Length: 370
Image 1 (cartoon, helix red, strand yellow):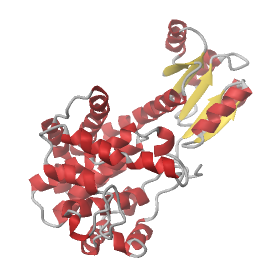
Image 2 (image 1 turned 90 degrees about the vertical axis):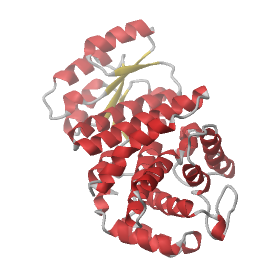
Image 3 (image 1 turned 90 degrees about the horizontal axis):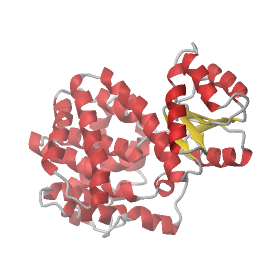
Image 4 (image 1 turned 180 degrees about the horizontal axis):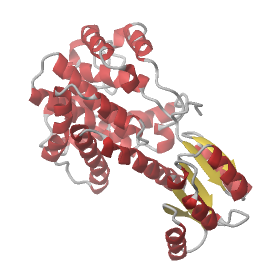
């Protein structure tokens, strides 16, 4: 796991060594994790360095998890009293809920719980802190982030229920993003989504923003920019069905895992094509953003002019974003290094004319916001 200090720090408190080791092992793939067998040593540690989230068992000695949380909520260490706390317990739901309410924990997991439930609960709590900070952003950026998040969260439910996407609602949610680009005030938006723990959402918003900005720079009109923004937000929708352990796996994927990962393209297309409202351009972005002009891409191995211009733009932005994004297992690549890789070893994959234009655009954008 990366030692990058921008990766959230989690504290696990549980006296059961086997269970604690399993939890730490699972979370360490994605976060920095410290663990303790008792509340006394844990309280001393979190006072010295407040974590981003605490996971504590209700039987943690000596006084138990509920008492630890009560102490935490009254602690005067800057920032510590408001750290999100997830309580774990073998008790019945009603008993745990009452304990959570009385002590001031944020939520609970009932043992035994699934690995997927653990990750989902942790991610949700971390993201609530990030999203609360959006309230301090200017209105346009705040509206753009809230709107795109609402749409993105609705996509998961739409996929599960088999309903069709309401494209007019999506277009409406992306309009503030286009307005932010028109005002040349997108940096706070990129910064606001940078630490979001839902990587697919954060990546999609970054791609949507940079695609819209790219379109603006090359002279596309507002409606075409809006199409790019919507296409960017939708382009990786199928990744919502990729298992967390594959989507966020540190290191190289095995051949069977690559098959699963690449399946997100046809899944996305099935989803988008089910709605007659989705414009062709947005579908093309989703279908071809992993194609390469030398024919080495997927899913169809398109080559040369077979790759649409919108998809050429999307491929550049998607690759640049993937290289510069911070992940749990790696820091983001510096902008200049990413561009050098794209114009050097990866040159045959990408439209170099469009890449030159994109490079000029990126170098005008502060590196710290990407």
